[in-house]
Image (cartoon, rainbow, N blue to C red; front, side, top):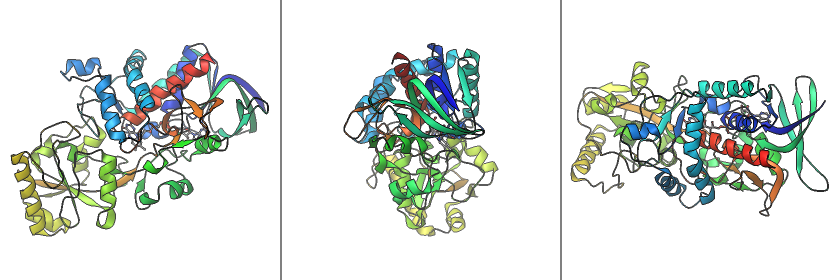
Length: 456
Ligand SMILES: Cc1cc2nc3c(=O)[nH]c(=O)nc-3n(C[C@H](O)[C@H](O)[C@H](O)COP(=O)(O)OP(=O)(O)OC[C@H]3O[C@@H](n4cnc5c(N)ncnc54)[C@H](O)[C@@H]3O)c2cc1C
């Protein structure tokens, strides 16, 4: 069957719906394809953390933050590998996206937290499945967005003379579709955490990590654009996030007690990293330890400082689920987790001394997380251990784009008519990762891609 639309969006996650809604609000007719029976992708199963800076919520809670500080943090995390132009796009458009979400009725949890890579508390939390449902409902309300589920994009189609992407071939429940997109195709098909072949090729170091992501995230969009000569970015930067319980299958999410003051130790009872670093770097360090796992060690006040509105900081729930190991003494804790007792005692005593002295000569830890929060002694029973390994929640690498979200080929030229947004885009995160910047990037870049396509 032949179909025609202004803008064709591939993928029904946060990036796809943000793009579709933005385009429809600007008067374009949009066709969205989702290969599964349900939309949502990784977006709907995420922790719902969004990194925004300079918001009214921050102001009301006395938190000084702005786009410049956010950009500085992102640049520092990127370690020279991230594209400054993409960081600037995020920083320049994040606040308007926060306001846009609010104007569409998005409600944020009242608390704000500091997490991976953040100098100040800037995690704004939403219910992620509700966020996708809200955007989908707003798309429907425009009367301009048609969504086809169970319909997978297969191959991009190019004009033989101009090279412009004019549409694509897809496959739906009733067979093949040949779709023409008058103003452009936006790839919002997510990452490839569900594609073992691509993972073996690009992330061999993560062989023993756990992989968690949307069922449809097989890198389809990446490969379709790659087939047209698209350049790729950050492919060597895939890393697992620290804090995933190695055997728990109830929770997709990591638990980050370290960001509230816990330490991380390996099976020998020794610390192995500055625990305030981005959890991607913690995950990388953890996978290098014996058996690729360790424990987060904390005491009662750190346990009590969790936040049950933020999944990665919801310690209470994990305690109720029996995932923490609890003991009245550190000796007993060491026995239960089978690490050498004397070593664990010495590790904690040394660490407490470093906290008092304000200097950690072993790993240089200075804060609870990134540049935020004073360190705490671990001294008040009961003590707890949270078994932790690394999980790859997203691939966060992929197509090279310019600041307008045009896909760029290996010779640095635009592939006309082809745009990308969300996790399929590479070059933004670089070496490490800030909590909330993947879902944020999906929404922000999705809207930018739509604006570019509408203006075409
Ligand atoms: C457990 C977990 C927790 C996370 N927590 C956070 C968090 O708190 N904050 C944060 O910033 N990030 C988080 N992330 C990462 C973040 O969720 C993703 O990077 C982001 O949501 C990606 O959005 P997206 O729209 O690009 O892709 P997705 O939401 O994955 O959507 C892509 C969609 O495209 C569809 N699709 C794929 N191929 C095709 C095709 N050929 N044709 C049609 N459709 C196709 C897929 O089925 C899917 O529905 C988390 C990820 C996971 C897995």
